[in-house]
Length: 220
Image (cartoon, rainbow, N blue to C red):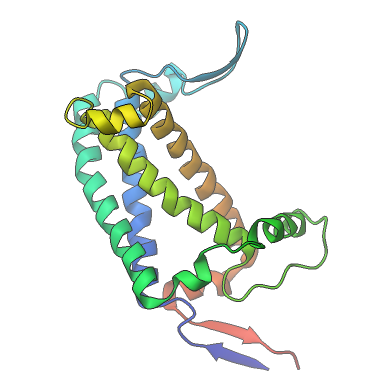
């Protein structure tokens, strides 16, 4: 027997989710336009470079070179939209009580490991979840903190003189820029994992984030 579960994801949550996707995409794209002007980061052991973020062919193939001013203009406009959407989302979760489903508890990190083992096919039984499983709680809460970190580090490197106290608090300009870059890589990794998980979860889960309802099968 199947039953429709209404309002699995409230309308506000769905709006914040889908608005945030293009905003973050534009932020990453415009950030790459800015990063082209000075891209020193790499994974290196001794003289051997294991990974370069990013080689020149990457910028050339995506037509990202010599577009610094354009990148800065897009980045700083959409920064405010990204920040406003994030503040509204956090405010909504606090006042609506949605935070109760989202914020990890003292068991979440241990249970998140069990979810990972289940997703990798090592553990057969998935830990029980009310609305979000433990791994989702940890990941989604981490992304919110990452958004705050991106905003603060972005302001620190955008206005290092006017916001000298913030830049100093973050360890200086170079440190703030490195943290900002690392957070961006974190968003990309989160998006890839999130997309894989959505595909694994199937159409019903995706539909619930679009339409708000879910269809639950209670057996025969």
